[in-house]
Length: 229
Image 1 (cartoon, rainbow, N blue to C red):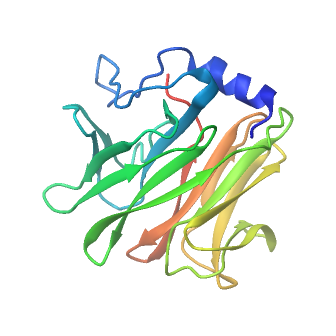
Image 2 (image 1 turned 135 degrees about the vertical axis):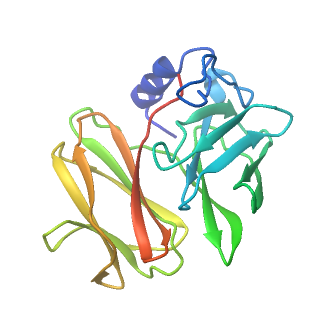
């Protein structure tokens, strides 16, 4: 269960009618899923781990949200705890993947779209954060590339491990000092792909780095852990 201070911080930012915004040019906000009462607050976000844009549509809704290179991840969307969440991720003109999940009370679930063997698949990873520290930044590492065994994350240019031995399909999170940081993916003890500049991390803020498949082997992408407004 998350500390009371952390939950209050999240809920105060969330407000009563938290909505998921569509594209930057969309004038009105698009509510994709029913929100629940504050005591059952749960959250879900969607991440595009592929090289091409992916469109997200909730079942029963006509509106869609596109995830692309500019914005590969949605904010966390508040949803009713333990209720069925369903939708479709499509990559026109070809593959599509159905999404179906339930989010436990207080949990944060991430749905990651991945291209595997020419098909669009999803990986769902959930956490219940308990590490809120207003003096530190919180960084999570998601191992979402099946080809990267014993995944880890090092400080770029230095043999300093931030995360190590992260199993595929899981995540690890830790608090770190709010500094300027670039990270390097490590697979089986060896660096892979290009380093990713995270910029200046801010105290009290939360971030996620994803290791996802790429044509050149693996790549990293960054998403701030923000709540939809």
